[in-house]
Length: 174
Image (tube, rainbow, N blue to C red; front, top):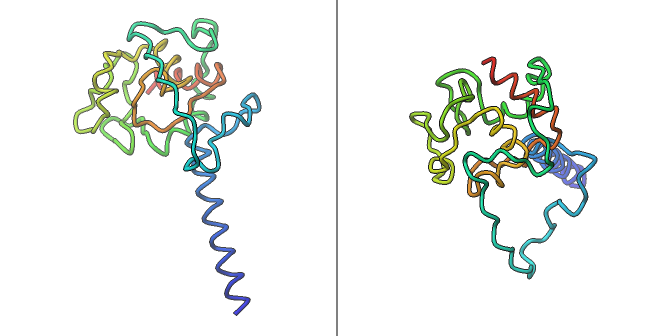
């Protein structure tokens, strides 16, 4: 009986580890500059203070980043961007017409947000008024929830400016 219990616990542990790795991939992994304070609380059901009102999204034409970095300060490397894009492939494809959990990113640069036919966008994204310029993508990829509050894209962002520039260079080539 004890052997069966150990085997069950082993499979359960494997499942938990696989789930954690998948979530880490979707959130861009960990960054040593992130503090433990940014991690979600272990027990969110406990009485927590009410969340402050969400800040208004930047205007559709505003491309200012939280860090103050601008895309013009970086030279994107498409080959490196392809590697960075691996974390996006769980939800997105660069092949036209192939939607997954997220829409195809083929031709994203210059496209209006929420316009891929047949993809069920969140109202926040569809009604954002955004045109995906390289600069707007640079801002969005830093923190998607800041730029389009209410987006259903569950991705924490890419804090590294060079990696953002690289993935944009890769997407621009697609």
